[in-house]
Amino acid sequence: MENALVLPTKGRPREFCVDLALTAALRVFWTKGFDGASMTDLTEAMGITRPSLYAAFGNKEALFRKALDLYEREKLAYVGQALEAPTARGVAERLLEGALAIQTNSCDPKGCLGVMASIGCSEHAASIKEEVIARRASTERALVARFEQAQLAGDLPANIEPKGLAHLLFAVLQGLTVQAGAGASASDLRRLIDTSLQLWPGR
Image (cartoon, rainbow, N blue to C red):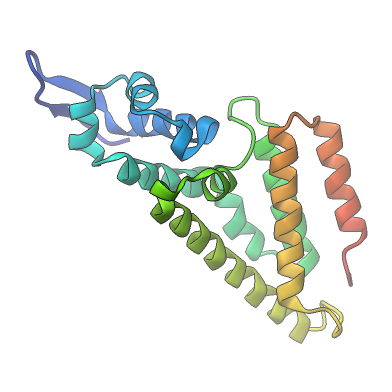
């Protein structure tokens, strides 16, 4: 954890933990989306003043990007681990199980921060939407490359298009997070995963 940061304000200096403040900001963005999170929401959750927020993190857009980095690093770590699975089916299983674990964790908000940001951003936040889409595209390219490797190794049927399969898997993942955000039960989400894997091509 980073050391506490002391920033000058009117009166006494304000001291706070940057890591804890960023974690609080992530939760606000995750719950309300980029546009839905007001500066008041953020400063109250982070326990800091607006001048302290600007001094430590920059503007709202910069704060969101740092929160998104934290989200990917801590909440989506299972994605990188999934790509290392020995089979294509194993990749899908790890991705789906990782997403399920996040959505059924009572400590975190439901839904996906990336989906919320890419769908719910206004025209004024176009750069945020573009960045979220670009990051997702990077992950999709890595998944396509992994499925192409699996196909060359005979782990996927020759008639399966790796890019189409990757897009299908992402659609299931996004559907899972949307349903979780809409209140679907853990058993419903588990049924979605199990059915998807039953339809998986190859081994």
